Image: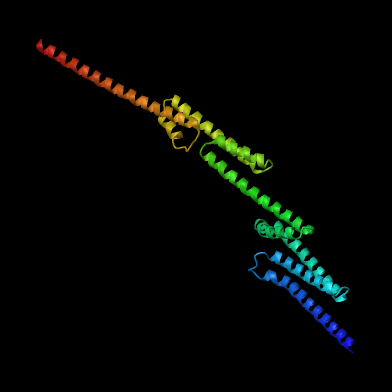
Length: 276
């Protein structure tokens, strides 16, 4: 009788342990479903993975106590199936995000979680592949940002007529991203600006030769230029204006002296006639 009582109690305990294990497993599986609905979670994908891990650990712990239990085998199969379905949906969802208009933000937010899973679960190939996809999107985003920065800086150089610096920036950028489609456009802008500068300098030089320094100064004087040639032309124009001013001053002085001499001569002639 005592043996029957002990056996009955063992069966009751086994049943209770199995019920508790199943309840705990299903709590974790339900948690997987509820996590995405909780906006306060910072890393929901990681938390979902951890919930599956906890469910698997509960099953393994219980199996160690009751090996060969068919109920555990069924629970394990259900957990594995739900985990496989979760990973498939996750794979599809992340791939869609990375191909969509929100790819940059998605790669930054999702990439952080995927890299955590790659470290926690290195034997799962899905995490390595998704991490590589996120890395590729983020690399493209960094490239686009760097290209945009180069374009902004290069055009700022052109606004200052600093064509040499613009060429240097474009050369350095080409060394990093040789196949960037924007480079020919920027090179064309540099060439066009260089032609504008050369034409302005040529026109200013012609004006100076025609003794029209004020027009030369008006042509180039307001350019926010770092090209030393403009400074030289401006110096020549100012010098020409100064020399002409000095020349005109000398001519006016000479004209006044001639007028005085003529006046003196006229008055002297009048006095002589009067004396006669």
